[in-house]
Amino acid sequence: MVETHYPEFLGNLSTCMSPQQMLGSLVKHKVLTEVDPGDSKVAVVSVMPCTAKKFEITRAQFRENRPVDLVLTTSELARMIKEAGINFDELEEAEFDEPFGTITGGGLLFGATGGVAEAVLRTASRMLGGDGAAKVEFSEVRGFDGIREAEITLGGYSLRVCVVHGLGNARRLLESIRNGEKTYHLVEVMTCPDG
Image (cartoon, rainbow, N blue to C red; front, side):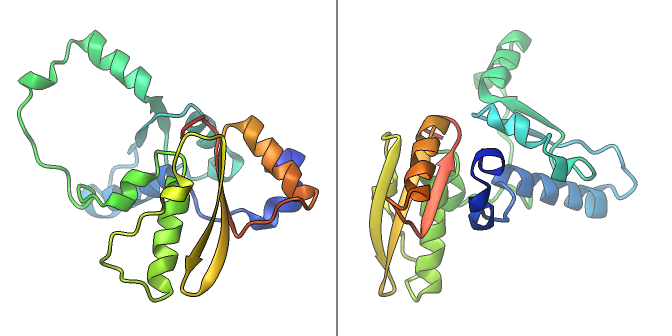
């Protein structure tokens, strides 16, 4: 949407790939360099709650070297599991694969609206001298309102943060920034409502 309707904001977009694309890239690198170096047929399938992730993997910058090859929505996976007759109560316990079996609270944040902003704020807090071991929560950026604003103080800096979900809300927000009505240091946009 920014590329086509708000190109003046392109310089403000993060250059980071999404967590889906980052993990896909790491998995492919690990498999192709350490697990099975001769296997050129490695495919990465993501299971994501939002259908926008299906579009993301088709973007031009990923055509040559695709980190993720296929995306299933959680609904599609649930339907496949049901059709296959899999009963999770009857499955044996197993350990997570290493090195990707380690989890953190920060990683759990990304699926919900406000989670990316909260992870950025936690990292900024540590970088600005906060206690890296402390559990820092920024509840101001969580919730179900389509547009949420907060002013958060980190390391003596006052930061204006906005979290928005849904493209209609994103358009309203971008128009208010374009018109000079609003300014922020950090804006998170999630395409799908609630993440």
